[in-house]
Image (tube, rainbow, N blue to C red; front, side, top):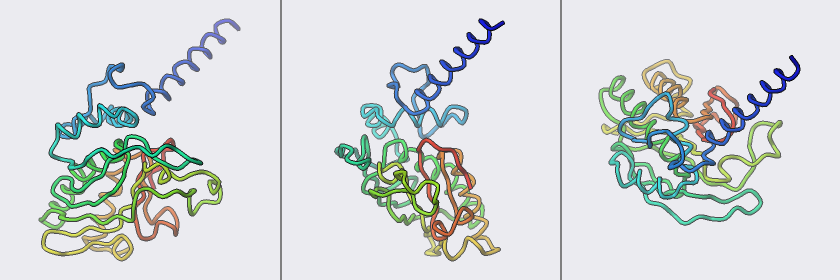
Length: 234
């Protein structure tokens, strides 16, 4: 019995280790059995793992960018980590799914997640609720060499922003010119609030952390999305 328990524990440890390795993109995509991420046809059951494969695989990132019209972006040079700050395999974004979104540096996996969110959540929600598409998305930035803000338990831990693996979204502009702001419209009861809640909830499919004004006061004016190690949708 003891031998069986030891074997089961060892098997569980091995499975857990392999899961963590695959989940965080530590094995090149060409060595995994998963089909490559297609932004036009994502596979919900494995999309998180497909996104993770883009974390360090520069070739896979370039191939993705060349094969899609959903995301308009270009690779940028790495900045080696210094004291936990820098980036690897990041891109510069100008547009996605018809919406202008100017981002200077964002990890390839987070950029792909954002593109999937805009294509499959933001634009459909905008058409359903407002009868028109989003033309511009405003953000508060991606890369910032700093620790986590707003949570005393994590104040000594680097933010995902420190590796350009997070993006803060603050507002949207529709083609008609109408503006929807997280700060002004999240707490309302109309269509703007409905839209913001719908797109936040939908972000949880593509991002591992998706925080809204519900989370704490530090997020009262934006959504925080990242592709880090934690899981939190609030």
